[in-house]
Image (tube, helix red, strand yellow):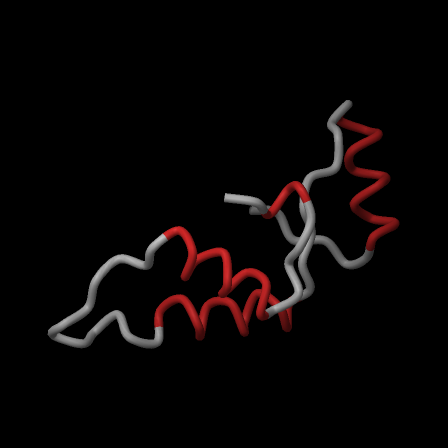
Length: 70
């Protein structure tokens, strides 16, 4: 994971290093995803998320499109 200050920063970095941009998310989306992903992690009955549950967590924070498909 790399952190950038703007979409323009992503574009400059990709051009400089000859990379194709991947998926991006805002800090808010990252925070919301982390809360959804790990909120139940310390529960005794914790289990790994199913693919459908993981896809729903991504969708719920607005991470949609080909890059975010599981």
